[in-house]
Length: 386
Image (cartoon, rainbow, N blue to C red):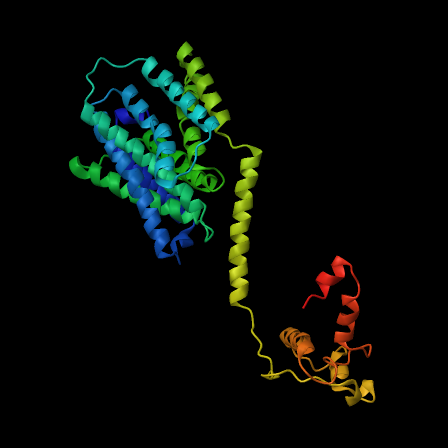
């Protein structure tokens, strides 16, 4: 990209890059935009607007800022992200993560400001616009993290395509002011395709999928380590000289990365919360599909009838005895519970003895209760309490 911007304006490069990235993902999976909900379209467009406006603002302010100052201002999103998370969503930020934020800021300062600032004036308006772009990048990360935690699902691929199309349209609207320039030779087209497909399309897609497993603040800290990878690639592949600023900045960025990684307990806690969301959703779906059967036997109202022992000379032919057998006529558990409730309440009613109901063993339930009152064990008293 550093070589291509000498032959292609930055705004034109951004527009072509994002539009090609969106078109590539769409051609790989043409049906990804079918059957999406309205919320998915709105959230994808909102994510694209936030990132696209940030890209346009950063490109506009770049002409009035030294590149080192612009890079550091954009990198301040690593500080803005936990502040916005605390203010907007009341999400607590652990001390270990704050330490990672501090190390990331120090590493960016070494990579950008310490390595040299051009002898140019600094426009405060351009600096404010760049910091606003950094805040939009932070909001983009927070919103993506919130969407990934929804129990209704997270269509990462579709959201990525909608985002990239939206960013391409916004940056294209900014670039079309003085006409659109396209790459000329095959080498420039190769660079543009690499930036579009490898760096942009796959990068955004990987970030969307990874955001579902990582909180927003650690994710932003990991994103801020981009200067570290840029320096490593520059030294290894492009044979740039390694200075002390690269070493110190690399160590600081490496420490920030280690502090940003979630612990095992945090990862397990998030996974447990995700499983709880899935379990609750499954329970609601199963409850909505449950078949409710009506009890064909109408329950009687009023005082419960009871049968004296003398009413059944042969206990085997007693109706209650027959119904108490396996496969009898009792239609539901609710009927059995109500019948037991009537028996217990009938103990204090006047009549021939107590509730003279015949059980499977030919004994009255109330006789069992009277025997239990004579036993002075706490467990039995609690068991037969009416």
